[in-house]
Image 1: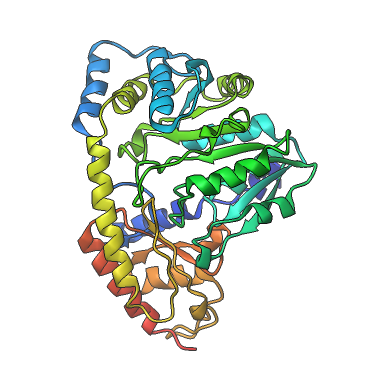
Image 2 (image 1 turned 90 degrees about the vertical axis):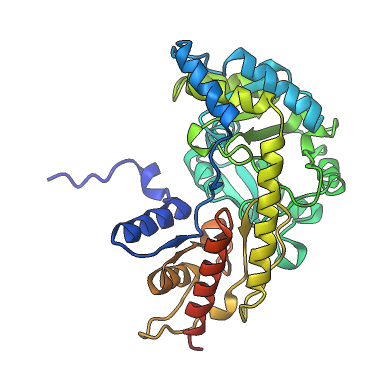
Length: 401
């Protein structure tokens, strides 16, 4: 019998904890348990009708053949115009690459830019896949710890302290998953003043939550002309247009990086689904009424979950400024004991206890590089938020110091 376990790269790769928790909650639901899923990062809205209709029309027209690897021309042009008019980002259509989700865009860029042993600078907390994709490139993740007292924002001084000759990429998200952090124009410009001093450092700006913003206008770091030739802007239709299942993400990048990503993608997936691209075209080129309405509802839910979280003893919260997550600090509960004598060693143990005790699915903060925290999604109904938070509070009350 073979003892071979497969390639090293798959052995070192961690499963996405958000996906793993969703799997576990679905299994419990299948057993008939009343599970409230506050783990998944997915809008609970249906894709707007005009976008669905565009896909139906594409099918009727027989738009079913292989699309270009980099994306259909109309969509690349629409994305270029969107970047220009909404974000003041000057990417030509040739600098746009459409992929099967923003995750693939990030993977493309990191594989194009990072050699084995080179470093990728990642502020914490970070989206779970950043560091795992870096592993696949052979690169090394260098983490900068954000602090809840500063809304998890890092400073130019913190970044400069970890930069070296091996630094190749700085990657961050705004609005952020999991903390809802939103960087201001002034803060991004201070980053730009630092980054311009490092000619071989590139910036990946993950802006997938652009339209879920509770404090005003979204700002893109690449709109600073001093560093546009160093910035890769990642976006997509999944979050703002409730199009998670369509799997369309896109990026704008310096031309040589865009061309390299097209070459790389051509050997992995080729072009994204032709029908989904036509749906994305209707989204990107259409009006933003549906986005604005969803953002209004998300803000109401944010206000609700923050008010409920304030009633839970011994947790520390900051108010998210975007996205649809609360990221409370739960360090008080680490080291506590459950009613059946199990010790809560970390946030994963805590999430497991809450799931098994009160059937609420969460994601542990360790998956985001912040083991003293956990992530609660409020991309669900007011009723689920209220019931879920009440159950969490009840489960926590059972833990003994």
